[in-house]
Length: 333
Image (cartoon, rainbow, N blue to C red; front, side, top):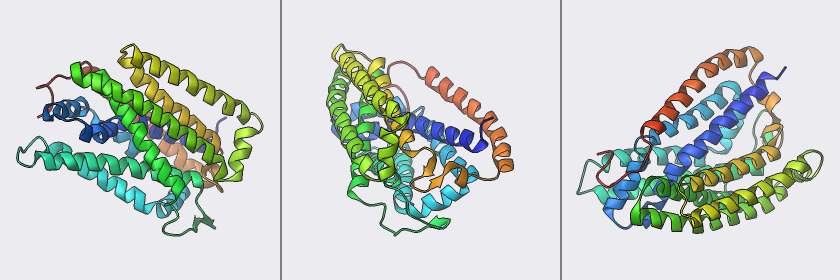
């Protein structure tokens, strides 16, 4: 029988991964916004995400709310440690959403809201990456509370992961634009995808090299026991995915580059899982230690068993309804 705490850890990990995959490409569209020259093309790429961008953020709420409900100790430790990047991320997402709506309602201030949309995308992504880097570094505990300082989250490594995530999301955005558009805009997105893929893989390699030096336990997990097999297989899988990504871009592929770009993130997520397990807040707080009582986990699991399939169904239906290319003049106004 599986422990309820590990079932919930899997569900929250799944929610976070789905958020990264779905909201990653629409944040990537915002990151690429300043590099699109014509206003018509900016309208087109915004319309590619207009039907789905707010639904994508459902998974962020599910992951954060789930952490609060079923791993309250982890939530109580992580939030004080990462208050600043998390608050900045949420504010950026709010301003980005406001800019998304207001940009269509004015002509005089349209360029201003375009700037807010891009800045919100950059800041939200950077803060997500910094928070991830700070978590990988480890969070200092004092008993059952956060024992570190106010600025512990801000280090060269966390800034590196923030910048790496911006390039990664930009890659997702470029492959999404390549999938959803035609003509010159698609050709530009395909060319950007190639260079962004090179940069993303370079950053992944650099972060991977530095990660074992953040805590000695990472060395042990990566290079000893059965985990060593995964540490060997994941880079091989990444090589295969990278080859398929570049090959499909060279051949003018549309869906395959987007799928392969997302597969890169899945591989990275697996690597993080290998590094963290069985901890939920490295280096000291395990999944079992942070979990709520089994009665609470079981009660919440009933709700999750109902809600998660519903969210998956309506998300899939939305993407199915709005499948196909987006052309100038189509979409949201």
